[in-house]
Amino acid sequence: MNSHDEALEVVFEGGISHRRKASLAPPPGSKMSRPENGRRSTACIVHSLLEKHDGVKTDDYAASYEGLAQEKRLDKDPHSHAEQTQHSRLLTKKQISDMAFGIRELSQKLQQIRLRLHVKNVFILGKAHDNTLIKHSRETTDWLLSKNENYNVYVESTMEDNKIFDAAGLLEKNPQYRGRLKFWTNELCANKPQTFDIVLALGGDGTVLYASWLFQRIVPPVLAFSLGSLGFLTRFDFDEYPLTLSRAFEDGITVNLRLRFEATVMRSQERENGSRDLVEELIGDEAEDHHTHKPDGTHNILNEVVVDRGPNPTMSSIELFGDDEHFTTIQADGICVSTPTGSTAYNLAAGGSLCHPDNPVVLVTAICAHTLSFRPIILPDTIVLRVGVPYDARTSSWASFDGKERVELQPGDYVTISASRFPFPCVLPLTRRRTDWIDSISRTLQWNSRQKQKAFTD
Image 1 (cartoon, one colour):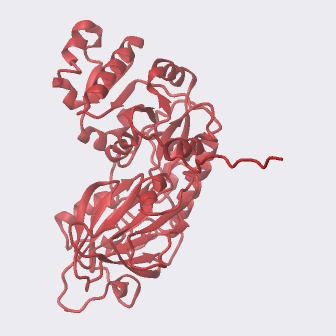
Image 2 (cartoon, one colour):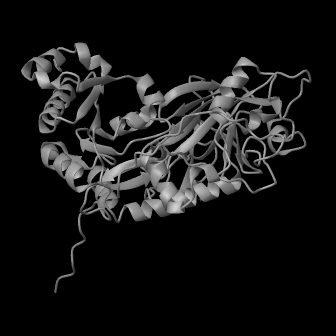
Image 3 (cartoon, helix red, strand yellow):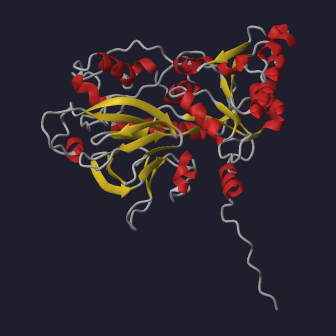
């Protein structure tokens, strides 16, 4: 593949007249269509390839992902565009289906080809409090800066004054490093993710999850070196980093797109009438009332969304909705909604199924359900789930997103969960790609490991 210097962003067309509360965006041209946002396009490699894959230019699509700017406007003036509130940051059912199918098809093709990156800005991510990883970050930075005078290397801003990393010593060692050793902040990752051509993650799976948290929308390709304890997502041996990086930058990389979820917290708004029913407000007679809930932040997650009882001593009461249906009321410690990637994390610990990351599914697993019949369920990735706290619940619940950004859900609040239009691109080894996941669960979980049965003897 050639350079992807053009700034591109993919948006998906409407084409469906029926809208579901808090799940669907209005069709273009309607009275509720979103205003122009003036947002800069992105240089996301995935979106660039999606455009080439679909053969449709960005300008040919109707805008459908303007929720972030809209939320900020609503925060300033909650009385304006009140009818649009429920649609914030969410796509139509057709848009979700088309987007998920397009990403799956592209991911399959990407695993068969090499992408040649024009690398200039390299992002290094490691644990800033782990002295061993800081040494590895310094070693990698030194190697990259000495390897090519065109490389700029970004390390965490805390490394600037870190004695172990010794940024001043690096600059003194080679004055040519000056101006090429740079420092990233959370704000830079959030506002200008297209700055970076590739991310080098040094650590375990938690470091890869941290990369997903830093890059909430556009994610550069992530090449993960194994320096942690498990390693479902860390595919490369750090001891061979010079050879690995030389091959990646010179010969190209193979990328796998991991499905992420987009989760939006919806807050219940105060109303004059005293008696309220969450089921009625979401799918019942009150479903067309656009003033019941307001969005309060969105997160793109790689592993799972968990809604649990938090510090409350009693179990939670949780309502589960799928598209336009009320699935069930859950009495449990909580519920885990997992991506295929997250099937080996909290989902596994809660008794959920192991799932190959290429599967287009959503895994729903109860946490310590107070019933014998609540079995884990696997749903298509085109579904829109809503997990809420009923108004008559005894206590609040708490939501967490990849174990971060933990927020309290009061009675009446809920979380909407659907496939994200910003997948997570992982760099794969050029060999053994097909068996890598099976090898990882066998190695880390000792999957189906037992002493072999003896043969009969005469």
